[in-house]
Amino acid sequence: MVFGSSNLKFFKTLIFLVLMPNFCFAQSSSHPFIPREGKLIIIGQQRDAIDGYIESTGIVPGGFMVYTSIQNMDGLDKPADHDGGINDAQYFINAYPRIVIQLGLYMVGALSDTLKGQYDDNILSLAKWMKNTGCPIYFRIGYEFDLPQNGYDPQKYKEAYRYIVDHLRSDGVVNVTYVWHSASMIVPHGNFMDWYPGDDYVDWFAVSIFDPMQIATAEKFFTIAREHKKSLMIAESAPAGLFSTHAKMEWYRHYFDFIRNDDVKVVSYINSDWNAYPLFQSMNWGDSRIEKDPEIKKMWVLEMGKNYIQYSLDLLKKFIAL
Image (tube, rainbow, N blue to C red; front, side):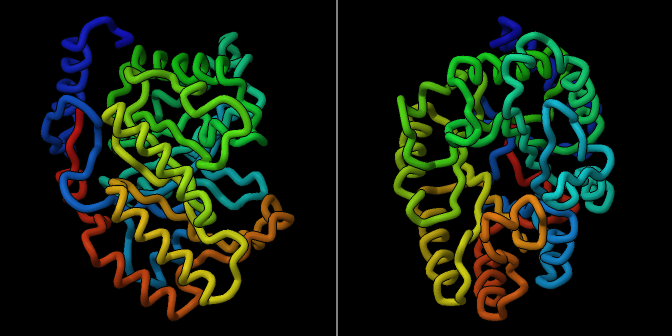
């Protein structure tokens, strides 16, 4: 571990739990913020889309998916929009006390500068914000590390990932769990482990599921996760590029089968009209909003009643922490 002593890490966690009375976690030797029972449901990613989901379904999820970048570190304490819809983490923290945040950190084109210390002030700002949230945070550093379009050099990626984790730990951040997130596509060269930062730096293995064809690759990735005794998360998902009710219902069938069969503990779904945002219009991904199709909405609400963890004031009592 970065501190060279498991006792120091335990001591810092204990101090955090004492100072944050909303946290009622039990102690575990590994895998922070694992649901005791059931599966945590997280909804993303634009503020208006998430509000629409809650208003229409009557379901407040247990967590919210938001994004920021190492370059700007925006969208955390105030709204930010880069043509992909409004990101506003603090909005949900203020509206729903004791929630969970799932945070994706964009690092494309910034690995070298991160390692040179150019963004150290941003990392310090992130650490301060994290500690002030009073929330568990699932933190995806350089999400979809193996997506070819991201261009993450494996060695630099591993070093930058560890660099950020080391800084957050040295800044006393203990309410965060670190997520290693694969795009779950066919890797064009090498293998997943080329990008692996190491067991001491990864708490969760996570995948993206936008096409059922990704499930086979995701299953291989999760096999590696089990070998490393890590928990399993779907970090991004939606039926992309599907437009009929029938096609989407087939997607959900494969999706929920995968979640059940692979014992996925955290499920993150993007409830979005992709074509409504300039950043995504050329991709023609369609509309993944649950509330826009009565048949899908009925199916979804029924599924959410099957042991999915949703928002409640005692939400944090439902997790095990390191």
